[in-house]
Amino acid sequence: MILDKALEFDQIKEIWKGLALTEAAGSQIDETSFLLSELELRKALKDTSDAKQLIEQLGMPPLQNVTEIKEIVEIAGKGDCLTPYQLEKVGMALNAVKRLKDYLERGKMYENPLAFYEENLECADELREEIARQIRNEHVDDYASKELASLRMQIEKKTEEMKQRAEQIMRSNKDAMADSFTTYRNGRICLPVKKDCKHRIPGSVIDKSSTGNTFFVEPVGVANIYEEISILKIAEENEVYRILYTLTAMVAEAGIYMEENIRIMEKLDFIFSKGKLSLDLRANEPVITTERAIRLKNARHPLMDRTVCVPLQFEMGKDTRGIVITGPNTGGKTVAMKTIMLNCLMAQCGLHVTSEEAEICMNSNYLCDIGDGQNLSENLSTFSAHIKNVLEVLSEVNKDSLVIMDELGSGTDPAEGMGIAVAILEELRKSGCNFIVTTHYPEVKDYAEKTEGIINARMTFNKDSLEPTYQMIIGEAGESCAFYIADRLGMPEYMLKVAIEAAYGKETAEAFSSQNGNKVRKKATGSIRKRKVSAQKTELLQEYNIGDSVMIYPDRKIGIVCEKVNDKGVLRVQVKGKKIWINRKRVKLHVAASELYPEDYDFSIIFESVEHRKIRHDMGRKYTQDIISYEED
Image 1 (tube, rainbow, N blue to C red):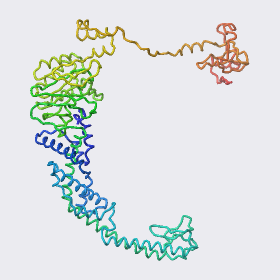
Image 2 (image 1 turned 180 degrees about the vertical axis):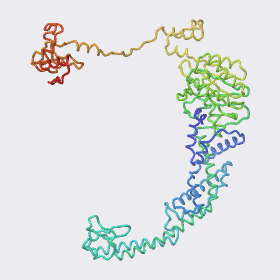
Image 3 (image 1 turned 120 degrees about the vertical axis):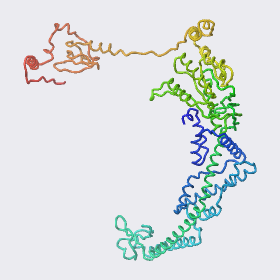
Image 4 (image 1 turned 45 degrees about the vertical axis):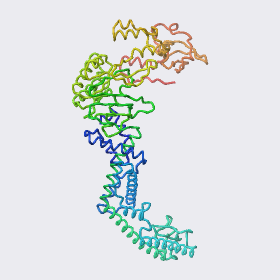
């Protein structure tokens, strides 16, 4: 449910569900919603209180998950044979029923109404005792019947006789054996006989080794005993099935009682889970009233740590249908609203509330608008989401509703937001519902003060420690404390005066005095350092020109630059008719090209052969199949 998530009631349900043992109770918890029948609600709350009382007086009830038992009883009812495992589960369930019956019987001394469910439980003592006697460790016990005990004893005796016979034959024919011990092949006891000696041992070859040198032979005498054992095992199996079918028939016969036991255990599991939750949350039974009034004493949010949660005092009566809460951000306004609605919702679901005392009216529905609701996939802004939720609330609200709305009119232009907030409050007032809203608009506070049936409330704030105290005072309007907090945190006076003038006018701003100076305290920050890549590249490219005479170190050879420095700092130099690549750091300018050659000098005369120059000349004036080949040095 969306309401459950918005109020965090789904988290309370998860805690509650963890206290239940049966799947049926868990499903019922998932589907739990507020009750609209006063009679049903009072009964549900009484059950919770009775369960809590029994747990306090007698400890936790001996309940267990009986979901599997339902399926087992259905199988027995169809006439199928139950397995020892299934019968043992039935026995465990009947033991649990007996323990629960005893538990409830002891509860009668306290005249607790839940204790009288004991009369609806049937232990089926005969079935429980027969299962305990005949089934053990998921097997039919040896002594389940005299016949079974006799058969298993004979099987054990014959098995031992078969082993002794095999060992005797092995000792008598040691030289024919490939090994000194017997082995089992396909469930039969065999002797490992050498290939050449297999005819010395009368019997059947059951298997042979991977090499073919050893044959596994079952001697005739051993085979005869094995056949006797097989006949005994068939008789044993028939006796086991007879016992299982007899017990299955007894389970089927007790099916009606078993189903009733399961129903009662699931019902009690749900009721006791409410009592366990009350103890875990240290909750109390609320008083349900037919008046449109809510009163909470020392209420707290059920999910908050009890050691740090500040108790809330809240009251709204017949003449006060709406409360407008104001105060600073993080002052606890939203938590206060959720605490109120959660306690009311829990009470109407038949649960105890986390309040020392509580008087709560029933509500026809619970409506809320909490959170910004922003949804990018649906293209909803915060304001759009709020308005969408508000319109949905207004379409469902009636005089018996409880409504909470957070940050009314927020998310848009303040003046327009204020107007919308007032319009929403007026519509809620007309509906006659109980409502609690939070706001920062001073005009909304004024509206609440002047309008009958609506009052202001504020969340208190410690101006010395700059911390909220999470206390609600009903009947007084709060202030946001934004300027005060900003002043205490060091905002300069000139900035505060600009803000106050914009909000309340020039006179108010001039009257304001701050302890802070008129400068924003600047902190040292890092600076961006730009890489001088372009300048460096330009320097490298312009350092040497084609035709420059350079000296190459460390050999101190003279060469001529034939290609300029590239971006890796490497240039090409012709030395004694060879062109080589060399790092610029190993080169020093000897004579500049401008001093050696006239302007527009054709350097191909120096760097290319006569043949290459002739081909290049032909390429410039006609088509030729000749190519210029450059040999890399």
